[in-house]
Length: 283
Image (cartoon, rainbow, N blue to C red; front, side):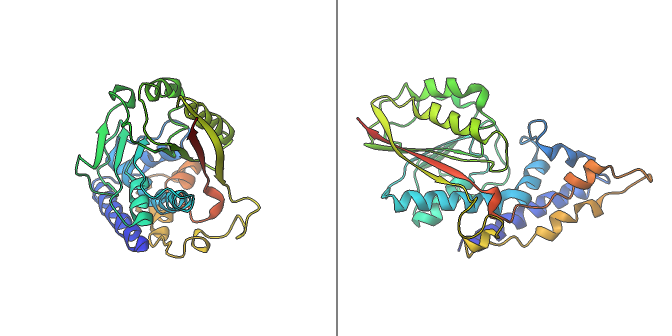
C-alpha cells in the first residue's frame, strides 16, 4: 500500500538522520534548507532531512499526476525523469500502474535513500548532467520534471536541444512537471515546461491537464489525505521537534532562522501541491 511505502521511506530517512545527529551537537547546518541558496542535495544528512519533510507530499503529488495519465488513457508509460532525485516519481508510478514502469532517471546526485529499486535495464539511473546523455530513448512517452524544472532553468535550452536529437516513435507524448505551488516562480516554470515541450518536432500540444488546488473541492487548505486517503506522515512531530536535539551554548541561540528552518514543518496540505501535463500529438 502507498501508506506503508511512505512509512518505510520516513523510517529509513529518520535512521540516517539519527546517525548524523549522534555525531553533531549543533544543528546550524540545517539552516541551509531554506532554498535561498541551492539546496545541498549532494549531502546525505540533507537528503535525509529533505525526505523527512517532503517525501510524503511529493509522492502524493506524483501519484495524482500518474493517476491523471492513466485516466487519460496512457496504459504503458515509458518515463524519462529529468532531475529525478530519490526516484519519488518512479515509486508513485509503480503504485498507480501496479507494474514495473520502464524508467530512466537523470540527476547529478546519487541519493543514498532511493524510493525504488534499479535493475539498470528496464529501470535505470544515470548519474551526471543530463546533457552528457547520448540521447533519450526513442520509445519514451512521458518526460517529467519532478520538482526540478526550477532548478534546471539555466540549462533548459540545452536540454531542449538534447531532446531534439531523438526521433520518437510514440504517437502521443506527455511532458509533465510538478511545481512548487507557493513559489512566485511558478509562472516561469510553466513557461519553461512549454519551452521544453516545443523541442518535440512533428508534435503539437493538443491539451493540458493542470492540477492546482486553489478554488477546488476539497478546499485548498485541506489535508492531503482528503485527496489521497492512504496519505500519512507519522514523523511530522519529529520534524517539528528537531531543534530540541541541538545543544544551545548561549542565550542568543537559536536564531530566528534556526527556529524556522531547523524544525520546519513537513508539507501536509493541498495548497503546496501542483502539477501540469502537456499532451503532445504527432502531426
